[in-house]
Image 1: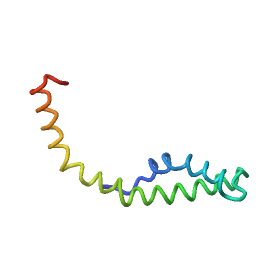
Image 2 (image 1 turned 90 degrees about the vertical axis):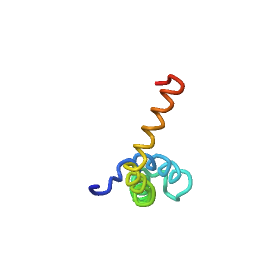
Image 3 (image 1 turned 120 degrees about the horizontal axis):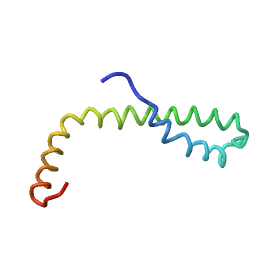
Amino acid sequence: MRGADYSYGIYIYAFPFQQAAFELVPGGTFWLLNIAYGVVSSGAAAYLSWTFVEKRVLEQRAAVLPRLAKSIEWLRLRFGLL
């Protein structure tokens, strides 16, 4: 696996964190501070998400996909699905 990919975490966390800064942080309504808070906090959350969730799920993908394919095939044959 190549390097870390924080882009999805930043995408997911940036908006809620910016909204939280707007409501809760003193000066969070000032656009520059709001952007700074959003970048730092969503970047930290993206790092944690990649390190403790996404990376581990992707590592298990190779083991899970063959079992998933067998289950889908069984459903297709048993119930005429898909």
